[in-house]
Length: 124
View 1 (cartoon, rainbow, N blue to C red):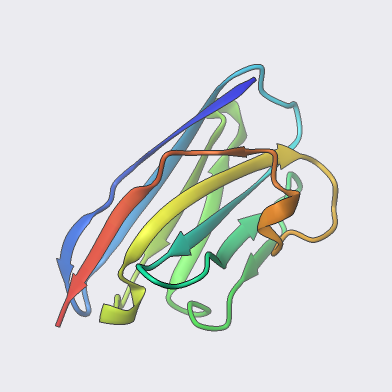
View 2: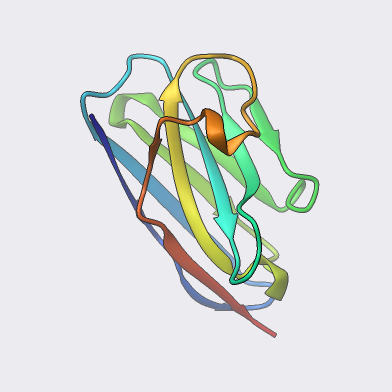
């Protein structure tokens, strides 16, 4: 089993930045694909960003140009640099993890492991 621990969430003013981290431990995969999803109260979970083992990056249109996903394979860690934050970015952010599949990186149902979530709140 893989355990994921997110960190870096908090309260920030609109226009500010946060950097989320997600560290994987346990029986990790050698070439994982990792992603970030978020869920606001009363809304469905939505895709934010994902990164393949080879480094290919994918973003939701709503965060393109503002967020950057990266990874450190040696540390089994994925990061989400969040810039120019907006109030509509307020949500619980979840880290997701799976073995290298190469397909459907935007689909939450295709990820095997999830973190507990870290809250991001952006004030206006």
